[in-house]
Amino acid sequence: MSWLFSLPTEVVFGEGSAAELPGHIERLGRKALLVTDAGLLDQPFLRKLREQVEWVDVFAEVQPNPTVANVDELAARAAGAAGAEVLVAVGGGSVMDCAKAAAALVCNEGESIRPYHSEGARLNGARLPLIAVPTTAGTGSEVTPFAVLNDERKGIKGPMAHPSLYPTRAVVDPDLSASMPRGVTACTGLDALSHALEGYWSRHHQPICDLFAIEAGQRIFAALPKALENPGDRTARAEMAYAALLAGMAFQLPKNAMVHACSFPLSNRYHLPHGAACAFTLAAAVRFNAPVLGGRLETFAAACGFADVEGMAQAIRTLQRQGGLPCTLAEAGIALADIPGLVAESFHPLMANNPREVTPPDLERLYRSLALYGTSPQFPPEMSGAGPGAPL
Ligand code: ZN
Image 1 (cartoon, rainbow, N blue to C red):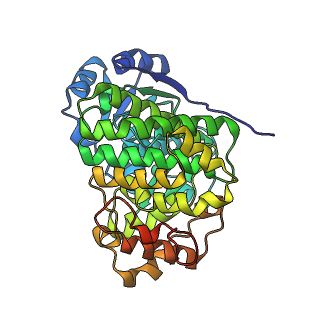
Image 2 (tube, protein in one colour; image 1 turned 90 degrees about the horizontal axis):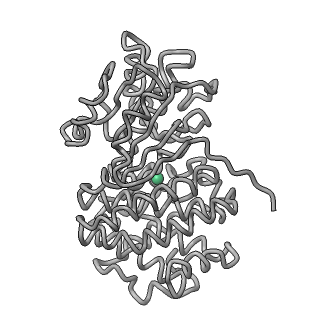
C-alpha cells in the first residue's frame, strides 16, 4: 500500500463560522476583493459582510457557468486599480471556480486564463490568497484544485486542474446553505454524492480519500431526503454541508471519472445543471462499475445502510425523483437520435479514470437504458436482471 495525501487548504467549519470572516480576511491581506453573484448581494449575511469589511471592489458578475471572460475580467479588476491582496469568494461552485482561476491568473503571464484552461499552458504556482465561502452544499470547490470554466468562444466547457487552485482557506458555515431552493439542494447534494462515489472508484483512489467518500455517502443518503422534505431542518443542512466538504476531500486527489465525463456534454447540449447532469448517469454508473471493484462498492453500499449495490442505485433514482431532476432521456430533452453524438462527446480525459473501461457501445447502451425508465423511481423488474441487455 503506497499513497500520498495532502490538503493544502485550511478548513474552518461550523454554524455561524462565517461571522469570523472579517478576522480571516485581515490575516491574509489589507485590500480585499469580494467575488459573488448578483443573486446573493441582497442576502442579509452578505449585506452585513459588505458593511463589516472595507472592500476595494465587489465583483458580482459571475455567471452560473463561469466563463473564461468572467475570469479574465475579474483578474483584470483585481490586478488593476483595486490592487487586491486577497480574494473572498462567497457563493456556489461557479463563484468559487471563477475566483480560484482569477487568483492564479493575476500572478501568471498573460491577460487570459484561456491558454491555461484549454491550450496546455502551465500555471506557475503563484496566486493571490483566496478564502472560499460556499453557499451551497455540493461542489466541494472550497477544497479542490479544480475550476470548471466555460470557454464560450471555443465552445469548450471543462475543468482545469492545478495545485495553485486550492483556496488558502475554506470557511464552511452550514447556515449559508440553509436557504437553498429544493432544486438546488437536489442538484448540489447529488453532485456531492457523485464526488464521493467517483473519488471512491477512481483508478487513483487511495485509503484516506476512501474514508472521506464512505463517510460522505452515509451522511448524504441519510440527510439529503430530509433536507429535500423539510428545507428548514437545520441538522440535515449541517450534515449536507459537512458531507459535501468530505466528498470534495474524497475526490480532490483521485479525481472524477465516467459520471463527470458524461456530465459535460449533458450540460453543454441540454443545459442540465452540473449536479443534475451527474445524477443523470450516476445510478447506471454504479451498476456498470460494481462488477470490477472486487466487492468495494458492496462495502460502500452496506456502510450506507443498503442490502446491496442495487438498493443503492435505486435510492439514487429516488433522490433524483424527490428533487425533481430529470431521470429519463425525454425528461432531459434528449432524443434517441441524439445518442451517438452525445456518446462521441462524452470521452473527456476523466473517462480514463474510470475503473472499468467504457466503450462507445457501453455508453450507447447506458443512454438507451435511460430511455426506458418510466416515471417510477424503481427500475422496472425486467430491467434489473443480469445478462445480455441488462441495464448498466
Ligand atoms: Zn461535480
